[in-house]
Amino acid sequence: MWAMSVKEFRELLRDRRTVAMLIALPIILLVVFGYAANFSVERVTTLVVGAGSEALTEQLPPFFDVVGVDPAGTEQDATADLVDNRAEAAFVTGGTAPTVLVNGSSLFTAQATVAAIQGSGTDATVEVLFNPELETSWVMIPGLIGLIMAFIGTIVTSLGLVRERADGTLEQLAVMPLRPSDVIGGKVAPYFVLAYLDMLAVTILGALLFGVPFVGSKLLFGVGAAIFLVVVLGLGVLISTVSQNQGQAIQAAMFVVMPQILLSGMIFPLSSMPWGVRWIGYLLPLTYFIQISTGVLLRGAGLDSLWPSFAILSAMSVVVFGGAVVRFRRDLAPRLTADVPVPLPGPSTT
Amino acid sequence: MTFGVAGVHVAIDGVDVLRGVDVLVPAGDVVAVVGGDGAGKSTLLRCLVGRVAPERGTVTRPDRAAIGYMPSTSGTWRQLTVDENIEFVGSAFGMSGPSLTRRREELLERADLADVTDRLAGDLSGGMRQKLGFLLAVLHSPELLVLDEPSTGVDPVSRVELWRLIAEAAVRGAAVAIATAYLDEAERATTVHVLDDGRVIATGDRDELTSSFPGSISTVSTATVTERSWRRGRSIREWIPDGAVGSDGPDRRRIDRPDFEDVVMARLLADRMTRHSGPESP
Image (cartoon, rainbow over all chains, first blue to last red; front, side):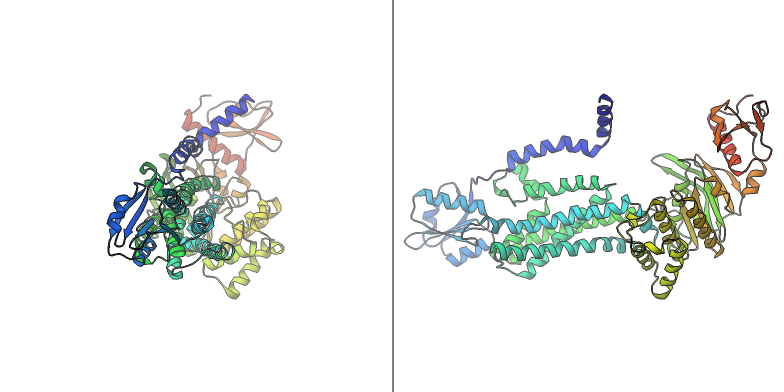
């Protein structure tokens, strides 16, 4: 048994990725669950509109972080601002009692807002927009659509490409008269199609089974999903270029997918995370896809408010997929010193 | 046309793998590269097909469309059937229609794979998979055919058929370069290059290589110097360097006309002795 343990330790210590995982994973889990796993909402970004807005603003407790006051604003203006995600709640004054519009697409924030108003003893009327019953599934499914695409795009794609390397057929492909773009495009296209079909299936089933609405533009959502898919496919290709076998690819892919589940805002609100952890979320593509999917599906948001997420995802797609293609091309076509046939001296014998 | 490498140096991770290697592969010839594990055989072939970039030297090869390459892993797609493998490789080389069908049927018949066309490559035996790999490499009738240990794991009967296919490819005009660890196979080649520690230590055809070699070879009942001995069937061979005593004796018999396998072994041992410890004193 001693010999077996020594052998196992030696093998383990030479597997750098496993060692890195053994060291990094507990630290990552501690940090994430210690800081990011926070359902409590401390502050809610708030707009106050209408004739009594200035007076009301002074009375609001610190929980309501007032980011805009517009005495000339109407309920329609406030609703439009919530659609564009400029605030989580809006107080509409001017009547006998103020109306509080709450953005129901941010579940925990909306729940905290409703609880805060009901607990304040005011006679304000609460109206939850975009998710009136505060259904968890309505908020989770737009994120789940992205997660499924990330899973297929990153893990399944990297496995498919690494299989080519592990079986020795990448060697074969590199010698065949195929352009690197044909090889990469041909390898990635099926995963793009499959992930896109999965996205459509989850979106349709989400609507049929859970009644998740689709308020906004289908075209805008489709384009956003396609751009996001390019990013995650690029991550899959990148992982495949640094992995020699499927085990290594799964390890690396887990490091990419796990943080997206925990830090993208899909489960824990980004606004509740301290900045020491939140910045990681802003580096993850799923964060921006969730902003697009919840924005389009639940709030009916348009490109005029979602363009920052589109722009960041587009930039990510160029950087990540471009980097992946460059690395994969390098694997396929190493630098050669002589591509053109040159004359050789005559045969020699010993 | 003659393909090949000239004065090629290759280093991988700072270790010299090929050191000034010259190997010519003329059209119509079968050129074998033999050597022990780590001698540099696979690197040489990968250099020839363009997968490894040499630090120095020149490589002559045709356009990729005219290269057929079978890596040591057989180069077959395990999740595809035999037919699907052929279809994919055929389309990659621009083959389709009747020409692909004819070539496919001809090669499947010759490789004895006609009955398993619907079987996944991953479900084939090791030998059948090697034959499929060979079939894929020759499918497009390449000008340069490069085979990395194609007969490893292939049964003796299939090896004969495989070598017949290799010879046919050469007869049709292909320049064939083959790496093998089997010396009995290598002697069928037009030219043999004996590779050791990244250098070609001997080159020639079977007769040239067996006509002269350093020292002598004896059959012994018990090996006296294990580093210079090897088993051949039921007997033990021992190489005696030039000037050393003991080529004849009561328990040993000098071989006057050693065959190809014995001579290659003698050359490898002589080279290693020179490299590691210098000439051994008698």
